Image 1 (cartoon, rainbow, N blue to C red):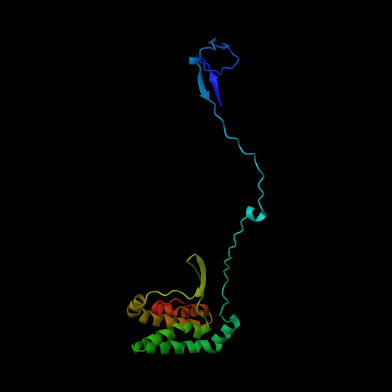
Image 2 (image 1 turned 90 degrees about the vertical axis):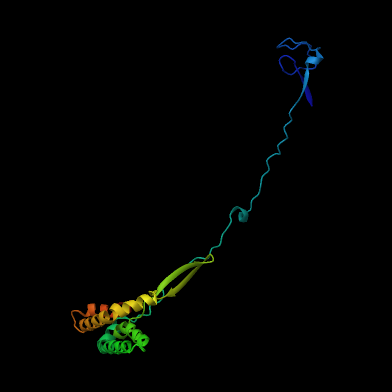
Length: 205
């Protein structure tokens, strides 16, 4: 649909108007009238009510929970370990230390000697190795595992043993054993012997 507009003022001209009331332009000057198309806006659709179900309104994401559990301790009770130390541990640990050093000095049997020396805490008070929780992310999944202390590289421990460990560990072992058989220094002696592997080969217990 088009409408006629005045050539002078540009306002719409009705079909019955001979003159424009605002500007006085004559209606019969057809050449002065221009036809301007009217802009018709598209009709907007009426709003419709949208029904959303409960399952669409709320998206539930199921995520498997990660539960960290402390592993059951493998340590014996304090009473059992104390009785073991009083009846067996104090003399058995001395035998393990002496035998371990003899095997280390023979060079060929050094691995067996070091293994024995690392077992001194267990021979003394039945102490087991410490277990730690390890949490890692592999391919987007959380992996929980248990393991013992991570050891230093073998070449570092070998250099330490050759330069320091063999003599420092002997002093540490003798001092720890002596302290453990004296009542006043018993806690210190047990603490030292539990770390004998660290003094000899930097072993982490």
